Length: 344
Image: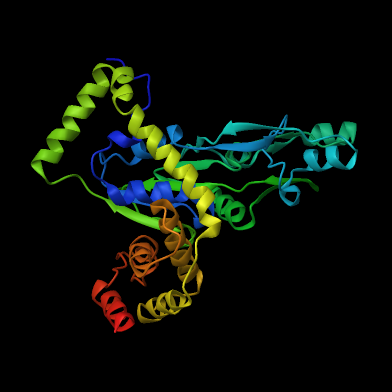
């Protein structure tokens, strides 16, 4: 068996919602990440790791441990700011975004990094050892079995995701660095629930199930066996499709700031949230961002009502009110009634 090459994203059979949600977050990192729920063996982890081959290049400051963006001084780390203030030039290079994995067993120190207090006392200067959040800045942060994550680690993830900054404080000494990342979590609901505070942080959510069409299941088996027989040859079969998808993502990122949003669709989205009794305004904003990104991915200059419908399908299910130990249910009859009223 030769499986040294990552399974190609384009070779994953079915699971369209999951693949679309992941792609949309690459195009528009401000969407807020995606939570993927599903039974074991439904390609959740395979899909996330396969993203690595599709991720675009990003401009970073040379020598920066946190991959600071040279074009965004407002979000620089302390080192980049000091270099600039001391008259030194911050040079740049392009590196590919990557998927950074956070193991479910990771300690809080491993995630946020550590401060050398003894060195600070003796030498009077800070010495910071970066953690996983430093690696994750401007990349994809992937947590498998996110529902099993330690509560302390969940709290620091929530803080960093909310602020875009990771701050470590020990004995009166503190250090901060940028920590803006796309959070992708996968989980099997049979192994336990996830804290509501963390669920609400995800922009999108999808539920994946095993294929029930016999021909599709056969295709899953064939492709997996072919991959395990010769992963390099298997990947080569999908190289063209992978390249085409990667280029489509790059074009969508360029088009996204230019997408137009008709005023009437803002009102439509607000009515959806009211009818579905969604708490707060985060859902409305995420639906609109998702619809803009869908239009960009399709190469269209303007958002349509169908974009709003598809965005609602991805952004609202995990925001439905629910009783303890029950799943929130998205009432599609209510959604379609709002669209019918909008079209009349």
